[in-house]
Amino acid sequence: MCGIVGYVGESPISPILLDGLRRLEYRGYDSAGLAVLTDEGVAIRRAAGKLRTLEELVEREPIEGNVGIGHTRWATHGRPSEENAHPHVSGDVAVVHNGIIENHTELRREVRESGLELRSETDTELVAHLIALELAKGCDLREALLRTLGRLKGSYAIAAISPRVPGKIFVARANSPLVLGLGDGENYCASDVPALLPYTREMIFLEDGDLAVVEAERVSIFNLRGEEVERTLRRIDWSPSMAEKAGYKHFMLKEIFEQPRALEDTLRGRLNRAEGKIFGDEIGLSDETIRGINRVLFLACGTSLHASIAGRYWVEALAKIPAQAELASEFRGRDPIILPGDLVVVVSQSGETIDTLLAARLAKEKGATIVAIANVIDSAIPRLADAAFYTHAGPEIGVASTKCFTAQLANIFMLALHLGNVRGAISPERSAAFVEALAKLPQKMHETLLASRQLASSLAKRTRDAQDVLFLGRGLSFPIALEAALKLKEVSYIHAEGYAAGELKHGPMALLDELLPVFVILPRDEQRERTLSNLEEVKARDARVVAVATRGDEETLEKVEDLLDIPEVEPELSPFLTILPLQLFAYYVADFKGTDVDQPRNLAKTVTVE
Ligand code: F6R
Image (cartoon, rainbow, N blue to C red; front, side, top):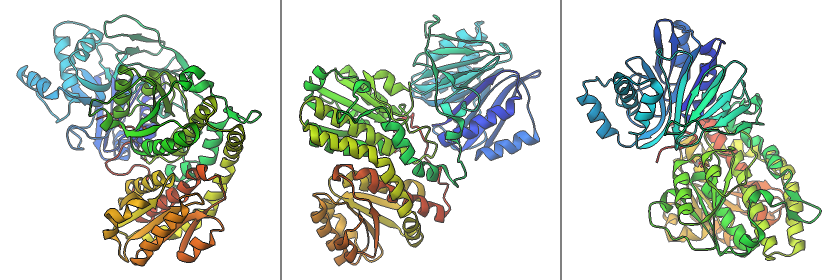
């Protein structure tokens, strides 16, 4: 939510800041701004709307300097407007901020009483004023920032500059991501890796409570007590082109088609084909711990929760361990019970979703062993976990998650298989068959995408005016129904619901009429017969039915006008394929409707506010 970028060095500054913001626009996109230190002081440019408006402003009114910060906003406090756009200035200090300051009411009162004028509705402006008030007491900027941070409750990633300390950016984080990029005679900071990929791959991920001073020749990191601390330097292997559209109209379409590659990268080095098992070292659990697991609890939000629901089925089927998947936000809304032998698997593409992070923290405090499945290395959730089992999907830029969903499915399936093998819950033959089937999946995904592209597009054309769409599935197709509905809602703004097909008679059937498109997901598995009966029930109520089924399923084909088919695959692996035509369908509906596919209204990629 919101993006921050900062640069200190000799290169022309506006293009670097604007390029960084363009690469972060997926994190927030209702207004944007820059602050640069010039000979006259701090120069500010801010504009409401998409980044393009700010770019045009900077073309008309250029700014140059060697130190600058930029921000792209996703409104939390205060509507999208120029006054509420960052940077916010108090005295000679300019500040940008991601996150939410929870004690803003009390701080606002204090700032007002001090006689300072409030020009925006944001909590960020309060941070700028608090720093200015501390500076007025005579301390330096680092000390003023430290004292201000001590007053803030909530989450933040902050960057501040002032002409009183030329050549320096001050940054700090708590529950909101912030990374430093190291160059040659120049250094950077950003809220997310893609902003910095064209400039450097040497990065330092700050930890909660860190305050860093970024200068052209060095970076220094301190804790909240002001003591200097060391943080690990990482080399990121994502390439800048991974964060480009590569000729596709939208990132979402590119990322849908990237899935075979993302899956291959995620499986690489993890399939022990010689022994028909998974190389489980990265999962970070000893065999003894695995044998002692009594329950697996998945915690996640949104798309990551849907991957986790598939995980519940797999852990039960392959490892014979009771499993649950829970919404992270609800888990932390109660006093959940964690028992000895609980393994908590926290699934998050960004590794920074605040509800998931806080749920993981709560589970850890209650004594659970935590395994994180994340795509962004060294992000907050894997850092907190006992072990990090990363997906290797590459940067996901489209706000609607696609390639990270199937990569998460892969890690979760490998985890379940590994648990099953260590506990002897699965036969060596069955395990080996799954390992071989996993190795063949990228090719099958590729085939599915190519084969369904045309029909998904023509169905989308016919469905773009629908008011509502229903997706039905049983067993492993239930989370796919949920995920398909979420994808359609997000990018096309059409109301959609995913239902367990068995629930149809318990209410949703009242919705059926000739105007309602219903997608029934029924790959060849042991649920198929029952789902086919549900399909008949839907047809009998005149609804328009589309099936997602296995190629050659003549019985289903006879019953529907349109069938999106997937190649023959082990029933347990069908989610990797059934989701693909439905992602394409959601994409094409959105594209026909002309919505902002990669940056849907009101959404942001990484949800760092509760
Ligand atoms: C949907 C989507 C969101 C995320 C959710 C969790 O397309 O992207 O529902 O899945 O915000 O995000 P992560 O996985 O980063 O924790």
